[in-house]
Length: 66
Image (cartoon, rainbow, N blue to C red; front, side):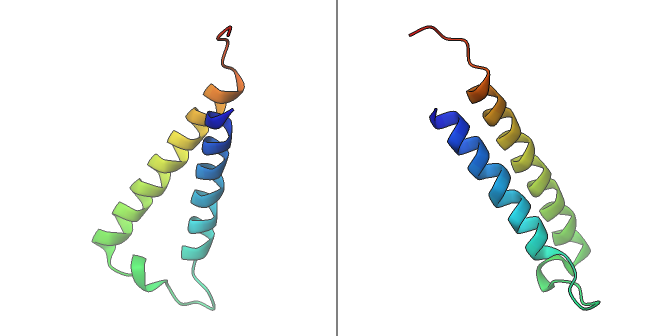
């Protein structure tokens, strides 16, 4: 149960952070303006999103018998 909640939280937080970093009114967010930092932000977002999806599915399809 904890894995499902934690995985869902990671996916939601990652999507919200991605939405927050999108350009607004034609202006790029200051955090991703530098190309070196922007590329690492992209890698971090994708890594956390992938980890969240894996943890979510692990919690949903866990076949342990207690």
